[in-house]
Image (cartoon, rainbow, N blue to C red; front, side, top):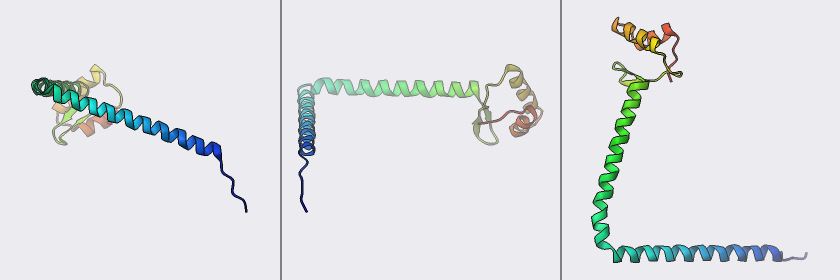
Length: 121
């Protein structure tokens, strides 16, 4: 029984290992530079953090409001189920008026959907 060494495979392993070491070195240098920058700019960071937090809260509030508006415009809120119902196809204005009229007459949204052949998501 003879054993052969695949030199090409060994060379590829060495190349991959060299690339990984290079990537590790770059990552360490990047982390080191970021750490030094943070140490040099403590005042800037202390002043900037509240601004960033304030900005994130504002954006989050705006997204929440726009999401609520989208739900109100494209869906119907069913109080009995406590959730928004969205049709698979966009409702026409006539269908929305029919839904409002039938709901005012006391029909549930499930009955309205069956009557108007509307499928909910």
